[in-house]
Image 1 (tube, rainbow, N blue to C red):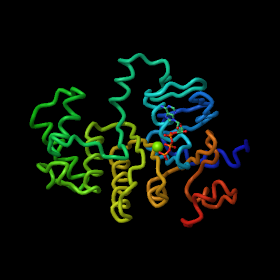
Image 2 (image 1 turned 180 degrees about the vertical axis):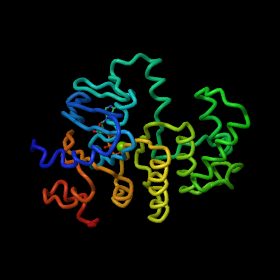
Image 3 (image 1 turned 120 degrees about the horizontal axis):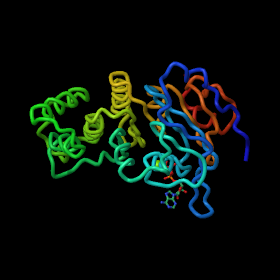
Image 4 (image 1 turned 90 degrees about the horizontal axis):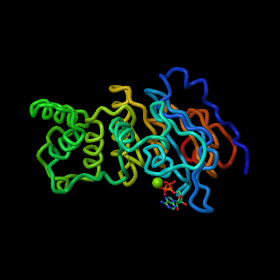
Length: 263
Ligand SMILES: Nc1ncnc2c1ncn2[C@@H]1O[C@H](COP(=O)(O)OP(=O)(O)OP(=O)(O)O)[C@@H](O)[C@H]1O
Ligand SMILES: [Mg+2]
């Protein structure tokens, strides 16, 4: 295996951000002989958006699943909010997950509930002990954030793909998560809607000082949302830096991601 060419290029940029929210060191995750994560390293700080790039099947979703404790890793360390994930008991894991928002590739709304009910459901399930009025206010605030205040009484089937993504985003953000995990948030959207969603992700980061890991094949989304990027190749963090830094790298494996998207 080739040594990382640059890792980590962007160390200097990390200083502007807060404490480490995710710390991944020498992480190994295999399925039998398939060594998906093979000494993977990455740190994400408070208020920082990190985009993870990588070919299909390289292990990006596996990484996200390890972060939220859905998959156990064999070796190395993975700390979220300072706690080693593999060592958490179920209750501690649930507490940690309540501080994390997910946006899946499919927006995964509940089809039998209105937009309002979908958003309320998130709040109720995490038992925040809010009054009906407070809950409605939060729902309205979040819908306004994503520009869909008028959709409050619609059913998911009445929404377009882009609207569903926005509602999915609103539903995750309503819990004011400290950490957001986006698995291909703009896949399947037209370029204009994809840009709107990317701008929304950026606006939410700035408004709530959320940290994010964004998995994306969409280089336009990556350029808009990333404070830093990591390129995952052969199970390692092969190259890391700002969009500008990485786009100048001539190593063909890294260049492949950037060749159609020069600054
Ligand atoms: N539960 C599992 N059991 C066995 N193998 C798995 C499991 N989950 C993932 N894998 C394997 O791990 C590798 C990485 O899968 P992963 O879903 O993380 O890819 P990805 O980078 O997210 O790809 P894509 O961009 O297509 O979503 C693949 O080889 C996959 O077959
Ligand atoms: Mg995936």
